[in-house]
Length: 530
Ligand code: F6P
Image (cartoon, rainbow, N blue to C red):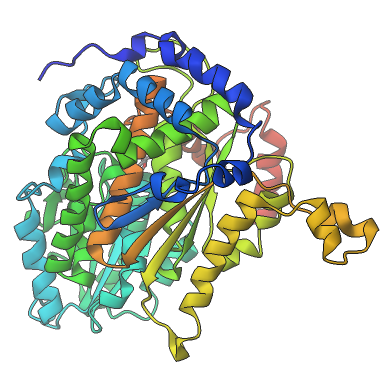
C-alpha cells in the first residue's frame, strides 16, 4: 500500500491546540492535586477507565477537563487516529525503512502465520516427545537473543513463570559477556537442550557469538548432528540456513515486525515452550483486545491515546525528562527493561520522520524497578528531589502467591500509599503538627504534586499481560505521531555497532594509531595480558 502524507512534515507546534496547551501549562502548577480532588469529588471516578481487563487511573495527573480537551484536540490535529488506523491497516508507517509496522496484525485471530509450527514444536517439547540427536527428550530451551529478541519474551516468561511447565527449563540470555551464555547453559544436558537463536537480522554479533559458543557446547555433548538442537527465529531464514540450521527449525519473522514490538511473533517460541500454545494464544488475544480498542475507541476514552497524550503533556509542556515504571508484582520485574527499549528506542529521535530537526524534546528517559524495592532505592528522589518524575504504578489484584495471607494486601497498600504521598505530600504545617522538631520540619515535609498513573491488572494472566504490553506499545506510537517522529526505526544504535567492529580489530592486534582511545587501548592490552 502507498504511504499516506505524514503529519511529520508539519511541526507539532503548528497545531492550534499546541498554543492552547502552552498557555494551560503556564497555569498547571497553580492548582495543586489536593485542590483538584477537593473541588471535584468525582475526579477519581471520572479520570479513570478500563481497557480490556485493565483498570487505569490517571486522576493524579496534573490535568483538568480543559487540558484533556486540548490534548484530545492535539491528537486529532496531529492525525493520531489516522496514524493508528494506517498502522493497524498495514500501510507503510515506517518511512526510513520503507515498511509497514504489522505487529498488531500478528495477534489478530489467525494472524500469526507460524503459530502452528511453533505450537507443534512447543507441544512436542512439553509432552516429552520431541527428542534430540541421542533420542533423549528435549527438556531445556535456551533463547539466545538481544534487545527485542530477548526483552519482551524474557519479561513475559518471568511474569508468567507460575504457568510454566514444571519439567521444561526455559532460559534466556542476551549479553555478549561470555559469562552470560556460560551461565545460561550451566547444568543443562546438551542431549536434552534446544538452543533458539532469535535474531531478526541474524547478523547481530552478540547473538551470533553466543550461537557459536552454544553450538560448540552442543557438539561437545552430542556430536556434529545438531539438526534437532538448534532452532532459529529470523526475518532472513537464508542466513540461518547458511549457518547450518535445519530449515525445519527455522521460524520466520516478518520484516515489518520491529524487534521491540515482536513479543507476539515467532520470537515468543521459547516463551511458548514454557507456558504452552493455549496460554500464548491468550497473550495474543489480550494484545488484540487493546489493538481493537486503539482502533475503535474515540480519542477522549481511548486509554492508550490518553496515556500517550499525558506523556506528551509532561515532556513537551511541563518539562519532565523521565518516566518511572514501578510494577508491584515481582513477576513484572523485567517490565521496566522491556519498556525502556520499547519507549527509548522508539522515541529517542532528534529528527522528524521526514528528516527535519524536531522542534522540541522527544522521548523521556524510562527507568524502573519492582515496587517496594524501588521505594527503598529511588523513591527519595521522586518524593523530595528537585525534578518532577511522572510515575506509573502497576499493580495486580490477585497475587501469584500470598503466604499466610500476609503479603499481598500490604504490598498493594504500598502502591496506594505511594500514589497518595506523591500526589498530596505533607505540608510543613502538617509535619510540625506531628511533633516534628522544628529544625527537621523542612526535611520531613513532602511537596506533593508528583504525578502518577495507576494501572491495575486483575491477575498476572497471559491475557492481562498482553493487554499491558499492547497498552504501552500504542502509548509509545501515539507520542511519536504527535511529535512527527518515526517510532519504528533505530538508527541511533548503528554507529556504536560499526565502531565496535573497528575496535574489535584493534583489540585483536591491529595497529594503534594516534587516536583518542589509544591510551585506553594500550592500557587494556597491558592489563589483559596474554
Ligand atoms: O538495539 C538495536 C536492535 O536492532 C534492536 O532494535 C533489536 O531488537 C536488537 O538490536 C536485536 O536485533 P536482532 O533481532 O536483529 O538480532
